[in-house]
Amino acid sequence: MSTLRIGFVGLGNQARENLLPALAQINGAGIAALCDTDIGRAEQMQGRLGANRIYDSVDKMIGDGGVDLIVMACPPQVHFSGARAAIRAGIPVFVEKPPCLWTHELEELIDDAQKLNVITGVGLNFRHSKAIERVQRIIQSERFGGLAHLCLRHYANKPRTSMWQLDSPVRSFLLAQTIHTIDLAIHLGGPVAALACEVDAKGNSVLIRMSLTFARGVTASIVTGSSFPAFEFGLEAVGANHGLLTLDNLWNVSVRDEAGGAFSPGEKRWSESWQPGPLDSGYIRAGYAVELQAFVDAVASKTRFDADFQAMLPTYKLIDAVCELEPRQPVFRQAAE
Ligand SMILES: NC(=O)c1ccc[n+]([C@@H]2O[C@H](COP(=O)([O-])OP(=O)(O)OC[C@H]3O[C@@H](n4cnc5c(N)ncnc54)[C@H](O)[C@@H]3O)[C@@H](O)[C@H]2O)c1
Image (cartoon, rainbow, N blue to C red; front, side, top):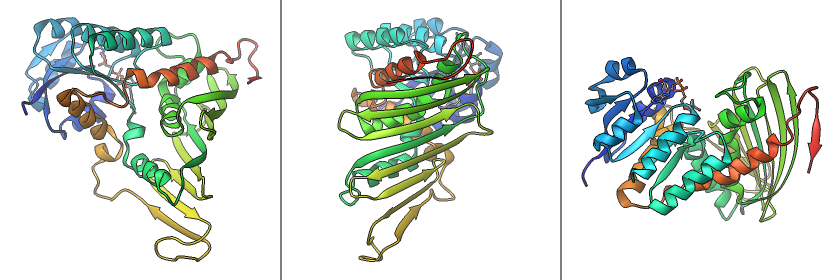
């Protein structure tokens, strides 16, 4: 199989801390070109990871015809325009979350990608992390019996100012942070049938409580906001056979059920736990290398990538529904079903 040529756009923090090191670990593709409007960043990194060409605009990079797929880590407005240009040129494109600001933009990208048969992807590393892979396997096991209820916590201490020129702190927060957790809830629970939600926003700090009912009867609650001292993520899953699984910060998975287990059949107060190995690569554990490898494999085999633009649509619709409840001045609580 020939090596696919990646054009990487947006050489900021996320690129340098996570995506470029993760790309160095994957098979079947190599970085051919780097692009940033701050050309100094591209110049500094030229030649690293084999990237010989540099650009200060996505359009110029596409126009040169030297890349087979594009990976972007920019502000969402740039993801939208860059992804649209890539799709129209027939080039597969993977963008960090969020892919755009608005649902109508996402629908435009989905429409273009479908018409032109272009593979797309969104960086949602939570769902590709080792811990979530393990959680999914346990939930789907005969013993756990599938999901009955999901309880998710996504606590954060930022952003507390509106980002990307949005005038809504709630939309800004959901697109920057809880997009991961909403995507995960839908990924595990399936299509959403109903939402009840309360939104508190004091200044630019938000606190949101959501109750979801999925079409197959499973329920979920999500507590999220920027009012917390630091980032914290927690998941509890109740199984159809009364098991309880907990995941702490994408790290410790523990599961218990009423009786038994592999080592103590019939015994009460039984539990098992799992953690990533101490020498596991951070980029694999956190899901970055896994999602990028899966995207490259999808491009090589011309098959759909699971976390594509189409898969994001239910998440954007849910974000729209929550934003409709955003308190306006004076700032206090509203609730709705
Ligand atoms: N999945 C995650 O866990 C995670 C974590 C952090 C950030 N992110 C996402 O990654 C993206 C980037 O975040 P960041 O923290 O690296 O931001 P950043 O500001 O550090 O980097 C963005 C880069 O994009 C460049 N850029 C801006 N406009 C451009 C254009 N038109 N063409 C080319 N380059 C352009 C900027 O010069 C900058 O180098 C955001 O969408 C963010 O939400 C995801």
